[in-house]
Length: 545
Image (cartoon, rainbow, N blue to C red; front, side):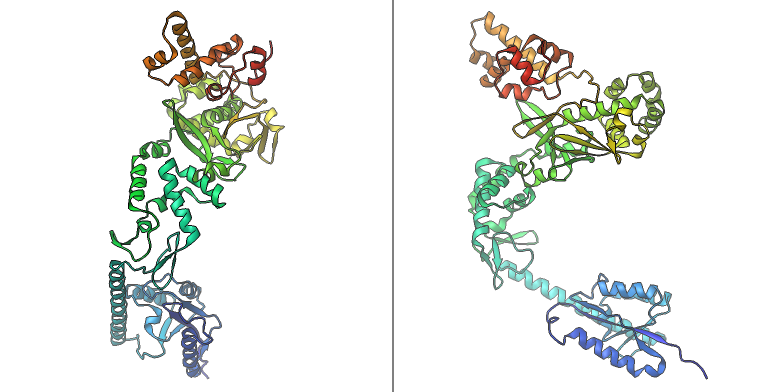
């Protein structure tokens, strides 16, 4: 007696929208019940129902991005399915292109499919022709429906009606109309008025936090400030129409905000990240306060451009959200370079690094390999960045420590004094810190032998201070007149002149480059300098004489 071969049947159901799926007996269940009855009628042929349900509720048949369909294909490729049962062929797909892909998968795994309500046989050419005709009409129906919906949306938008999508902040949709949400609308108006007054996205984020107790990302504020829906407009493609909703701000305020935004020099902001010029610790530096990456940012003041590492949370939500604050790029880069300098005295390590980072400069580098600090000075910023990444996997800046996670290469070459401070590949250094407002200054760790570092900005300021003092004492010119002649601010010139009151040994230390790392120009010109030299040494961290 011939044994009947079992045919494992998977029932697939689909509905384009999720409307009505919450009902006790919905269309997906009706499709499955019809499929089960059909399989039961073929029981004599060895057909049996697989227990798995392949139901896609709320998914279009115009593409194959459906979770249940993906599970079904995975089971087909695993040879768990012999027959696919659908209520109608358009439940499986409404695209001829997708159907051809499905046929290839079915044929490759000896799988067939059948429609409960449409009788056709794909074993011969006539059956395949009928199937293609059915799919062509299904695709045509889908495309016609799409065009009808798009035309309706376009007509509604031209009338200023809300047709769906992401609901803009400050509104709530009611009966296809945007209705003002009082509290959010107040915040939106505050954003526009505040930006006209302060011209700062970060400042607006902080003021909103202070006034409303809520945090908003800088990118969200930017999107709101350039969204014309707040002046009563509705957009369709690239055309704006008068909307039926209430405007939250006037056209004058919106134009003023747009004018301020356009006047911002965006090229200077973006080039910082494109040229790979600033910050050798990009990508491996993290803030221990908010646990986000720290990336370079720039500020302009007194015709100087200064760079700081700032956490991404502070950049997105405002600098008040991070207690660690910003760290000067030059100071932290120098501290890390001095930490890795002793490791470069290892000949084997240096040989491997040079071949990987700068193979075209091997002879030049090995001439000075006995003085790694000179090697680092001659390397480009990009080469320094590559070198640091070969040795350090991650750096976490805490309020009073630096946590350095070494790479496997670095762990094999650590000096003894570093090994004592390293646990599970992480070296923790108690780092003296000082803070001026929100700027965190990092002094060189005690375990690192200091290398003379000339602070060119401070040296130039000292030279200016003594030159200004000589002019003022040898001529009858006033401070205001001198400031006008030098094309600088009189108040700033007065603060620069304070530097002449520094103790002689402090000035010599600055000129020699042996001053503490946190002894920089900015705090000196912003704060009073003690007139007594002993107090200066104690305040600024210089040794007593």
